[in-house]
Image (cartoon, rainbow, N blue to C red; front, side, top):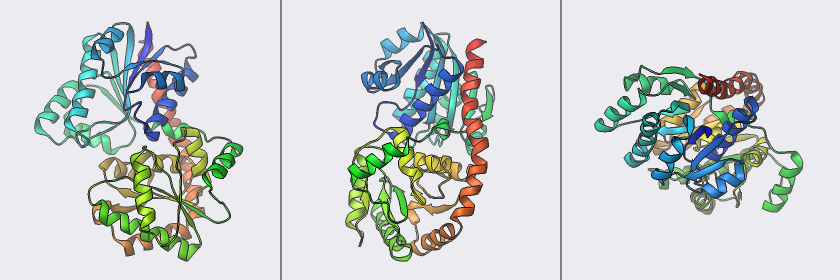
Length: 363
């Protein structure tokens, strides 16, 4: 028997989703240390080894259904799983597993989810029908609540919390010094983090980001550090942007655990990020951020934590971005203090997800 089955975008070499899983498991175990967890993963052996849980192949639906019959509570998330921007196929997968969990008699919780966008008419219909079957929904930001309302999802209890990764702690300074030495990163000047992915309009915005990185070094003597969060695609993007720069940036060549990535980002003076979890990590560490929007989930998070956006990457403007960089740079000490104060509440809300899950488990 298992207490909880966790479903999400796990086993795909994505640092943000791995951080979510680590935080969920840690928080659940902190409340109930003997909790029995099974995780659906693309790479179940690696997931089992990394997190000390049982894990099964997320695509083996016969095994998933068999395991559901021995489980009490199904957690969908965290992450932005209920959307069809990635693909309708992805949405169908998550809706199907939720429906199968309910059919198997499990209690169901959407755990710290981002919701939407769901664009297709048929997709919206089935999303409404299936999500209305769940017991509890916790949301990682307020904008997702508006999407639930638009989808006419009214039956489950809905609570706005925060992303689980906001509660993670960075690795020790000694570990980070070792990583910096291995990666050849020198810390004798300010470091600016970049977390960039490929999206529509990439050729235009990649050049602007390269120019912004050069601007930071020319004006503030700040070196750029590109931090890939999804391997190997983000690494290729970083290497491509580097070829468009006048100055040579640092690039992390290896994938690191969530606590190591947090420790690396703790050393930064500012972060310009497209990847949502680069922004989440930065905010949790009180490092000032400028978000670059490619998806509504990024805008939703920035609004939730009241941090600035450089605009949509599809129409990014270099001069506007430079002005925003100057503004954040000149106020970074004040911004960091504001984030430290806000983080007290955000970390409480991140932990609240696990408290709600355990309460549902005991009902």
